[in-house]
Length: 92
Image 1 (cartoon, rainbow, N blue to C red):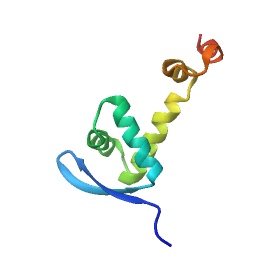
Image 2: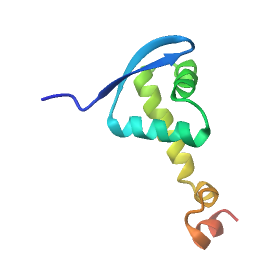
Image 3: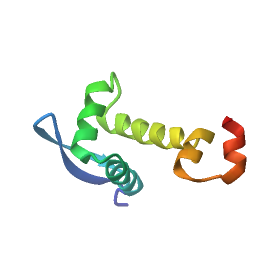
């Protein structure tokens, strides 16, 4: 059975490396980069610098999850224009 992971090259602080992630994780990472006005390489370099003991791929998954969890708060929904009156009532 073939792996569902996709292998891509990224540049981490000037050096090339590869990382394997699920297609959905790549899509999310690219979306985050677009939203933040940064390159995937810049985000990957930041994750690499902060990841601690985990693997690089695990660090990326945690970064992606954390990004979307922050957006899923009531305040994040208001900033994104989601949730209408209910979401704004929760934070104010």
